[in-house]
Image (cartoon, rainbow, N blue to C red; front, side, top):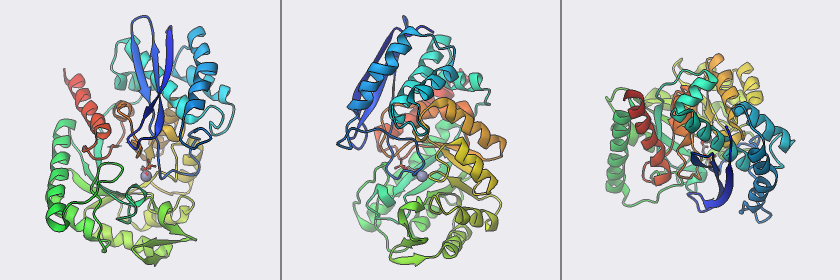
Amino acid sequence: MNIETAEVQEILDSRGMPTVEVTLGTRVHTITASVPSGKSTGSKEALEKRDADGRGVSDVCRLLREEIFPVLLSREFTDQRALDTFLIELDGTKNKARLGANGMLAVSIAFAKLSAKEAGVPLWQHIAESETFTPSYPRLYMNVMNGGAHADFRLPFQEYIVVVGGKPREAYDRAKEVFKTLGDVIRAAVGEVPMGDEGGYSPQFSMLERPFEILNELIHGEDEMFLAIDAAATEFSEQGNYKMLGTTYTRAELVDTYLALIEKFSLRSIEDPFAEDDTEGFSNLLSCSPKDLIVVGDDLTVTNSEVLKEMISMHAGNALIVKPNQIGTLTEVYDTVRLAHTAGWKTIVSHRSGETEDSFIADLAVGVGAYGLKAGAPSQRVRAVKYERLLAIEQERTS
Ligand code: PGA
Ligand code: ZN
């Protein structure tokens, strides 16, 4: 593939923070790719590089223009792995600290998109074929109520999620219906409430169980639907304990709290139930929970195959969140997903709380055959485009 044009520009994400958008072109095709940004980040994530003011990305843009683009335009890379290896070696650090994982990932995704275009196949198919994954439709993990760091801790857990299985169009319609009815129920109960970073409702309740009661009612009797949460527990951990709604929980008490919620409600998937360094909490929960509970690592695993290997050996979960910007290149994402699937762990491809209108994660989820796609509430355009891309993929696969 002969790349003839390479450009970068600064755009704003859904929180109004600057991020990078890369445009690559061959003689016939031009594509763009942009990268999101997290707020409740894991400490082992690759570095998202910002200017000295803590906001801007002008330094990342300069590095792309001065160091990466000249090579892209002059050297031919045979495949994604060759490109990503070049980026990793050029960066030369363990966590992408020199060039920045944000700039590197934008180039990595842009290269994948352009390769698919040049090959004349849909992006998800290019991912599946070049990395020998079996494509499939993910379950929708739609975050409908926002708390934690995404909503000033108006609710203790960060995300209250409705999971819907089945074919994308039908699943999306059902999820949207639940989201709409949830709005009516919340407005009737407590009036207008703010929306959180990921477009979900952020009511304030004094009882831990209240959001589950409301959501359980909405999905009661529905097949292929269950509830999930992202506790993002690092955010409410305090010196080995956990603090929610004014109460302090020990690790053991928090395990019991989750088990009680699972027993009482259709809660089947819990992400980051404990702080990222509390692996014992994760493995304790997994060993005493019902077999079908999905214990998901996010800050725990940070899409990093080295970290994941360790967590697999410690039985610290049975699923992980896959966020490309936690690691910085697609080849590393694919390697982590492969390792997970080989170990029998489920993968849930995810957006970040600060998003752009790039729908890449929908193709990624289908291409690697992920169990789930977590993309927030459709009240925000940056979230809806991911689900809409999934519907377009369904059309591509059936036509
Ligand atoms: P983040 O949150 O993008 O702010 O890290 C998403 C998550 O924790 O899953
Ligand atoms: Zn998370």
